Image (cartoon, rainbow, N blue to C red; front, side, top):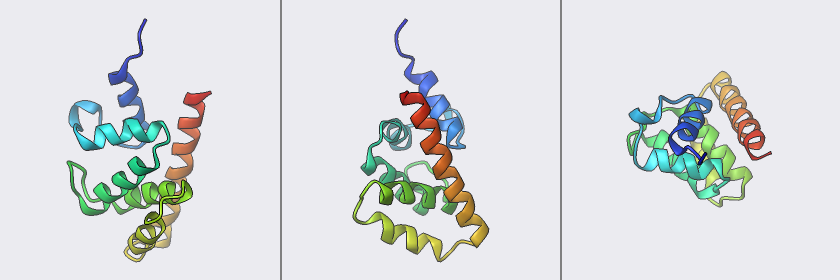
Length: 114
């Protein structure tokens, strides 16, 4: 039995709160796969996509903050600045939700790697 990328991608999308892979294609889907493997640049690219509503992503500042946060923790140079900019448009509750989602992403991808 081989590795089922579609099933894995659907799992990643669901863990991240997004629709199934049939509804998201291209850059977002590829970045989610790379992000599941710990790619810091993919975290940053997802932050950009969700903060600008580009590449098929809807504008979602909570998701943008989550991805910028993960990229910043991973050492991406621009991510902390982008996270701060996004934070200016968010409530304290939204920021807390973004942080919760970032922790959930880490927990989910860590479990998959084990």
